[in-house]
Length: 114
Image (cartoon, helix red, strand yellow):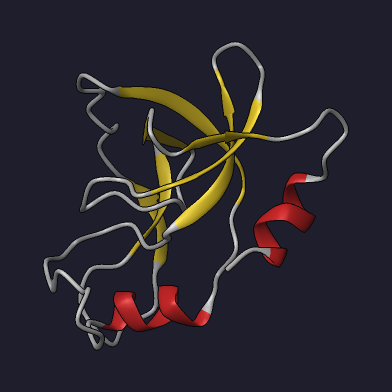
């Protein structure tokens, strides 16, 4: 799949191929609708805050609006590293699947949260 891929701390992400996420028990595959690039996303990608894994390559992003297989739009996050939300697809956890109302604008939701 295509994703924003960060190869090392301090570098800019590049648009590149990345392995598909593994869909394990309690997760489902969903397609990205929109994701915000918040200051914490930049800090985590740079390897600076306490939550950074400092393991590269990785896909940045902590939350997003995704479209599930049944067509529903959901707000989600908490993906398993090295996967972030700036990718075509993500394995989202069932516990972090907040349904959005019909007609919700994915870009406004993603940009307005966090």
